[in-house]
Length: 319
Image (cartoon, rainbow, N blue to C red; front, top):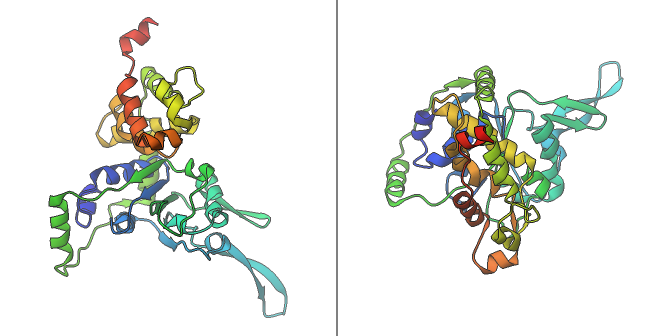
C-alpha cells in the first residue's frame, strides 16, 4: 500500500502511516492543512488502491443533512398506489471523503455523528446499517480562515486522529514540481479488498498489550486533565479541559496498528509516543494564557511526553 501511494504522493510518510493505522482499527481521520497540500489527493489515491466503494462530499454552507444521509421520496406504482422509498445518500459507502467539513454549519456536520460512532443512519423512523468497512476521512482548512465553522467538540472526539499536514521539504517540493508538470498519468493498483481489510482489523485487534503500556497510556491521558491530581502545574495553567477515556482507547488501538505494520506481536511504549500528538491534539483545549505564551496543544503534548516516562516492566512486576 505504501509503495502504491508513493507513485502519486511525495513524502507525507507520517500522514500515510496514520491513515493506514486508522483504517486497520476502524477509526476516522481529520486531515487539517492549508489549501494545496494534497489532502484530497491523498484520500482519493488511498481509495483507488483499495477495492472498496468511495464517495466524496464537498461541504458547502448550503448543504443539508439529507444531502448526506439520504431522504424519503414519494413514488406511485402502476396501480396508482403511493408509497415512500428511501434513497440512500453518499454516506452509504466504504470510504467517505468529507471535503472541507468546516465550510458547512454544525447542523449538517452533525449528520455524520451517528454514522461515525454507530455505523448506521437514522432517517425518520427507520435505521439503516452502513456497509462494512466504513471510514470517514474529513479534511478542513485552518479555522482562522474566513467562512469556516469550527467542528463541535463532541464531533472532534469521534475522530481517532487529527492529522496536520505541513509544507513539504525542499527536495520533496522539487520532486512534486518535476513529476506533476510533465503531464504523465500514473496508474495505481488495487492491493486490498473490503474483506481483507476486515481480516486485517481482526488481526490488529489481537496484538498483545502489556499492562505497563496500559498504565503508561492511563498516566499520559490523565495528565492532560487540569483538575486531575497527577496533572503537572503547566497543564493546570494552560489547559481548560483534557482528553477523555476515548483518547486512551485510541492510543492503544493505534499503537496496536503501528506494531502490526512493523511486524511485531506486542505494543511498545514508543508506538504510543508516535501517535500521541494526532490522538490528543484535538482533545486538549488550551486557554488564553497558553496562547499568550505561544503554547498550543502540540507543545503541551510534547512536554508531557518528555516528562512522563513509561514505567519499567520490572517495577510493575514488583508492585
